[in-house]
Amino acid sequence: MENICVLGAGAMGTALSFHLSKIGHKVNLWGTFLDEEIIKTRRQKKVDLSIPEEIRVFPFEKVEDALREVKFVIFCISSEGVNYISKHVAPYIKDEMVIVNVGKGIADAPFLTLCELIESNLERYGGIKKEVVAMGGPARAPEIVRGVFTEVVFSSIKDEDGKICCEVFQGKSFKTNFTKDKRGVELCAAIKNGYAISIGIAEGLQEFCNNFKAALISHAVGEMTKIVQLQGGRLETVTGLAGVGDLYVTSQAGRNRTFGKFLGEGMSVEEALDKMRGETVEGYSVVDRIKKRILDKLLQEKKIKKEDFPLLCALHKILYEGEVAKIIRDALSDF
Image 1 (cartoon, rainbow, N blue to C red):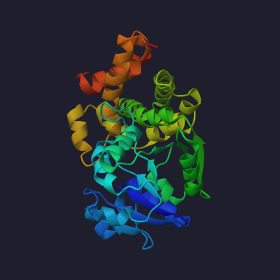
Image 2: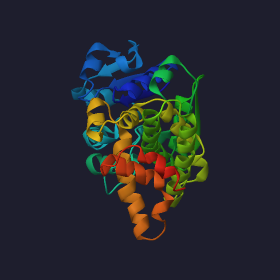
Image 3: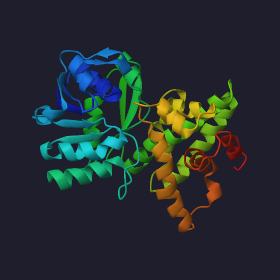
Image 4: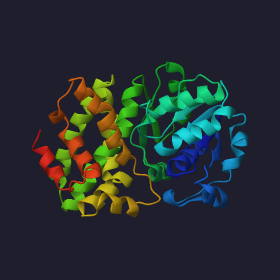
């Protein structure tokens, strides 16, 4: 049995707390300032769960208590909140703790991945120099709570912490794997959210469009592969759980798909974001950051051609340049 603190009482934080408690670990669930109602009522509506009594819950101001005497610290924070929260908790992180990031997104410059951002803040604000383990793969929170079979991948450059996480999370219906391709796992986890928007757009444009969606997924995987490999990641990461697996489940359901569907139905970007108020659409910012921070840089260095990424470029035009959603169809003819 391990002592674990989960940071963030959102859907995923609550689901993982439930899973880890169920397989025998002692779990503290700490809520951010956005989770006050959940911590007070012990009810997470997004996963239809009343938090069991064996899980100790802590409000925002009790972060020091939540982190006291724990071995594992799990960041279940949206990409927009990782910078603030990692700074906030850094003074209470100890050298012997194992740190895991579950969030999926691209960090603000000068960092690219969320693990890099957390590692920097832990060192700068807490004086702790540690590698943060990344978790990737298809893991929808409601299904974890219901005990549906789930398989994920943990990644660290050093073997020890990543492999320990595999052992700690492993359960009868929760399978774990390990890879050293941390950059590939983190990039896949973020990028697939952007491409999932295109699947939602297709559904909004036309009912019963499985052929169209399958084509989009195929081309999305091709573009993801190019991006990840150009950043030092591995092909097998893209074709595995962190890439194809996570892209599939995100394209079937989730906030990014829903946001895209609103766009396909004719809403403007502003209207669709307003409709999603209260929900973080990770893919929206990811498309812009991948385009500006990776593709544009590679274009300047003449390592790629613009026509190598027609789907991502079409998404950027729709989300940031005022183009209509139906141009997503035209992107496929450019392959």
